[in-house]
Image 1 (cartoon, each protein chain N blue to C red):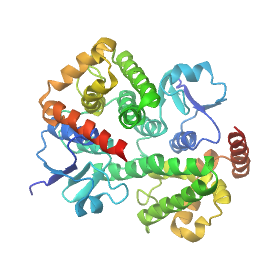
Image 2: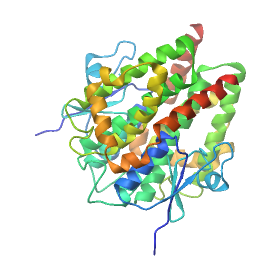
Image 3: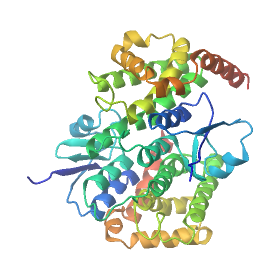
Length: 219
Length: 219
């Protein structure tokens, strides 16, 4: 029986981007369905009744929600010859820690940069640079966060770089100067086909961010 | 070589409680070290320099941080004959979803009940009851969230019941009436030795919550 793999998604979402990259890393064909978040589809509301959020992966009719859980599901379901998570429990905990850091810390700070103005925004920008420096130190001389191979932590973090680039313009900061290793890592990641095909177009994303900020600030 | 397993913990913490239950489910001997969160130990600051939070599991000198990652590490490291997570990827994603729900939703709402007063607190209490009803529906007629066996989702959620009981007094709500299946599940969980030994004493917890609220409101 042919597999049916549907991804309910929204193009600028760093969370949706993670699922796209993971599916492409595993060579899984999927049907990406763009959601209008102001008018959510009956399918999204049915498949994720608790959070009503994208991304949702629907595999043969069964939903998996929450981006990091989707990526782990993809890793456990397809392409065991090219795992996204390492096999050693300690190394697994480490890459999970950095993926979790993206959600608990970086996303929250980026959101504040995005939604605020003035002093609050300035403070959040500084905090964001501090987050990047933490990542710079963790990366050290490794090619990827898990070591020699692109994997779980990298694909969890790289979508934020995309936002970062757009936010960089807002934040008036030069990531390359502050965090050269992280910038080189991002370049390495973006050279992968799975990543290049999955990240939103930078110019389109910048316009989207500017436009959404304007709308929110007008409220 | 004898294993060295240290848990940096704080007795009322629902997050620390998860790690305690998981270690006891697996029959792992551990040295629980109580942290003074107002004067964190050099060991905690060294082992969790990013978040500086408990719990931290230190296994033969190597730290694992974040409670859900600690529980997964414990499951992948010890007692493979009594797994905490199911082996099927879809079932794994499901129990991970409910553990994540505890963190993303229940903890945030419980925190608001705990820290706020007046109308804000009233709204948060109602939202908390709604969270419990979501869990009641999900549990249905199953013995545990993962099915017939106590596991990952249960041990992630049950520490919040402890708080709930104390919060129940604050919230003036009767969980048993609103959510009979959930109440029966909690009773079942609390009959397990691993859980009974790990949950904070209810009276002590109630006093702690009342005292901490007073201090915070005086600020």
